[in-house]
Image (tube, rainbow over all chains, first blue to last red; front, side, top):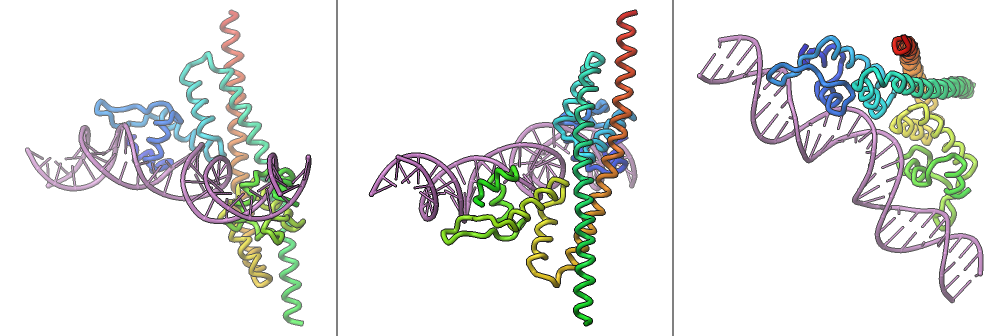
Length: 125
Length: 125
DNA sequence: ATAATACCTGGAGTTAACTTTAAGTCAAGC
DNA sequence: GCTTGACTTAAAGTTAACTCCAGGTATTAT
């Protein structure tokens, strides 16, 4: 697959795909003789994975560390698992915080509802 | 309260407090004659509210819009409620996405667990 | 009264994560 | 074989959200 096809498929600008590769967010993409990128299914898998993780807010720095470990082979399995455990915990904490805020927003919205009703009554009366 | 006390209380740098006020993220803070900030309980309430919302990822742009509406008084109640409704929906969507990723991370961690066990068996055998 | 410390403003600098640009190379259609 | 549009790189530019700095004023302790 060419870079523009991958760009289309995952809804990521081609520039971003090149950037991700340059900073080591995905392993080096397969190339033709000429140097043009030709994404394999595995390359695409990485793009999808990274897009997903970035969507949840994992930093580029963290993800490049993960990819760097992956590229070192099997002897880094435990470190990779640990990295994922740490990120999972962070993510869980963020979700919890956001759920608190969600509650607060809902409460505030209810208060607004009440105030608006009261205001309109006053205008009618 | 002085800015450094507020900074301490909410664990936000004094520079950030000034910045928040400058860009309209909180309404103008009470001042002494001399011009020095002297945060009232209400000013503190804004700081707390904004810190909370920023923590959940609401943008400064959105929050300044909210504060601007607030400063226009009661006739903006409906618009403020609508803004909060929109933000609540965004937040809810983000939480859902993050929960998906959490699931995926947990799955991946289990896979690593299995692979590590298998590897260690191989090394022993 | 004076020295040390805290506060003020406007503006420059920083960081993460892209995004655009310039200057060129490659590939598909005629 | 030539044009046109997609691809390449390195490097500069952008955006959001701070963060720091210089030069000056205010407050507090001695």
